[in-house]
Length: 400
Length: 220
Ligand SMILES: Nc1ncnc2c1ncn2[C@@H]1O[C@H](COP(=O)(O)OP(=O)(O)O)[C@@H](O)[C@H]1O
Ligand SMILES: [Mg+2]
Image (cartoon, each protein chain N blue to C red):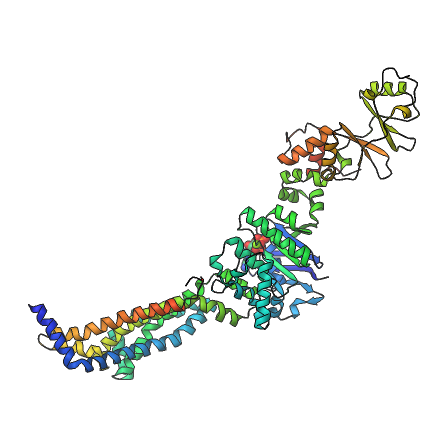
């Protein structure tokens, strides 16, 4: 493990228990986001990692070494550090700022300069900017420098405390792209404090949700959206965001109707017409004795003159589109809607028919997701909305 | 008519006693400079020190404040009892008076440095000393120099008064003028160079202050 934090506690001299039994193991290349209400101990936890604060009890290990036994100055030089207020030295040029830690580490002038050019390119800023002073750059440009400065000495772990909190949404997004690139393509490990849930969900490989110094939930963004641990998490995520996330976390099986009208290939047209009449449908799904989907029968395709004793297998359409029950709605919705059919059969891995998805229910989901809220909050009109509410309240279980 | 007379007299004084005036100018200037220099040597470290130990700052600044409230003539007289007549007493007085503006400005300057910049410096692995010398001091230098500038202007004033305790300098000329009948021109002959000295020092130091302010822009 690159970073291990176990039973960390921090009590401030005034008696405030800011962090209480914090445990986390971080592997190389992970992107960990700390999120929580203000005062929940995110900054305190982060600052113990580079010994800007000293824990009351508990241990932090980096590559198996207890950091309490290391020289704090050396430790800090090996960990990138970015704060919200940028913290560029106003009286140093961009180049001097980038070279700061390499210089502290005693790198040669040439090597430092080389690194500065490399870093400014990484920040996607023009090389000429190296000679400028921070005050001459926009907030977004300054923070780009802040980010690459944190890895100018090849730091593996980068700590960031609400680094983009003060930036406008568009600039923030471009910086999020930058850090995501650094994590995914350069394999850097990030501990990233944020209060922006969208930021946490889009950047993190794992999210640590904190409240009053305690970890409430530690999991991947998908799992947190799918199974919020408690009401606090649900509220923190926000119902709107949960609904918007539905297409990406709900599976087809969660919105399908079970027990669709079916018929077997050996049965006759007369049987088919009876079933259609009974179920008030105009298409039947054809399944064999193993429940496997083999085709469908549409009454409009059958000529009036056909003998009612004709077996279904001679009349049915073998070309049938279907979706897997386990598929995420978000992944299949485009394809399904494009097919232009009213209903799509749902099969399991053995291609056995398990249900049917109606076009209307899909459209409802997509519509809700785009709009961000269901039509009626109190009494969901459609069964699909019931599902969404169930997921949002985490009362329903995801049975397939 | 009388005015013209005064200017004539003044020109006469300068042409005949030019070298003497220059000598006294020099003397006054050096006493003020020495006093303030001592003040800076002692005051700047104290200012830096109390900025790192902020609990001490009220006490230290309080003492410096008390010194400042003693009228300069009284201070000169008190010190004269211990140090005797002459320039050393004046230099010590200037030193004492320069402590407050220098300590206070150093302290304020040090504390006015953006805490986030300091946090970033420490967080990136600078030692306390490196934070002090590469961030704190450069970023508060301008405020420190402003303190020295204040101290020097006050110091020149004190040096002139110092002539009363036999330290010589431009004050001597002024005192002579006050003792002479119709000595207006002689008073001016001492007062004008004094004012000039104060103004020039202030200008020079404000230039130095600007030069020492760390660049934060690449525009020249
Ligand atoms: N130096 C301090 N002394 C006392 N209490 C502090 C100090 N710093 C932070 N706290 C308290 O500790 C708690 C956690 O703070 P912090 O880690 O900054 O939270 P977050 O970053 O999640 O907003 C808060 O209640 C805060 O008031
Ligand atoms: Mg914080």
